[in-house]
Image (cartoon, rainbow, N blue to C red):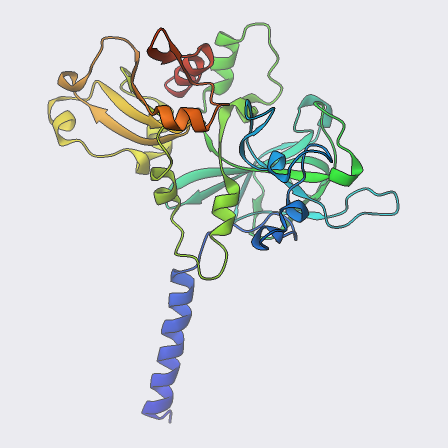
Length: 340
């Protein structure tokens, strides 16, 4: 017979174990064995800068290239191991449990080279991890394949059509993204006539990047419980826009980002107000009634946070002309794609 004391001790241990799982940090793991991001001052061991004379920040996320005018949508995570020829041999690992959405095994068709996209669902939110410049895919890694967190999915490489990646800066380009629209291929044919789209909906233009380093840092012991939904809602606001469109795929795919508005639900929803960060990621979506709409236009820019725009000079969504903010052509196309 188990004594009450032993039974209580086992119950306490079980509660602690469940609590440990409940309060686990980020659901995302590092995509390689390189965890130097955790080491203060060791950035050059983690990030692969664009050249020996460039700072480590050029391999990080954001407005980090061409003096801040060029955006880098992922993390360039440096290799740890090479073979006799100096080629990288690091296994690339699935950052979280998910399903392979796309596997491009033709490196000559993309700046990403050979690349993979994996779909994950966290807190009801679809998020897509991308792994680029791969030398090879792991056996059996094809679209539809279910993978576990930490499972080997590929081998690091240097494949790309945009640049020749030197051996000493061999890396995996890693992204965490939201998918803009599952009608992208049709939108592309309509809006980019004559241009090639070799990857269907998995074209990089249809993926909006988040700063994966911030998410990975939530894995560090002592960090607060990570919430992807809160992370998205806390993104710095670049601008607000109203769209006079009642239905588009993003609303269903990212329903947790759609806020309640009883007034619109009562009188009828005619459009939405959308909060965007500087990379164009929708951070909040609010249904609006006709009485709340500020324009008859399909897309109408409501406001711009000038401080965020100045801090992120690579943002190509809005521009000030004659003292008035307006969407750039790229910004307009991005919004057209979102609500297509």
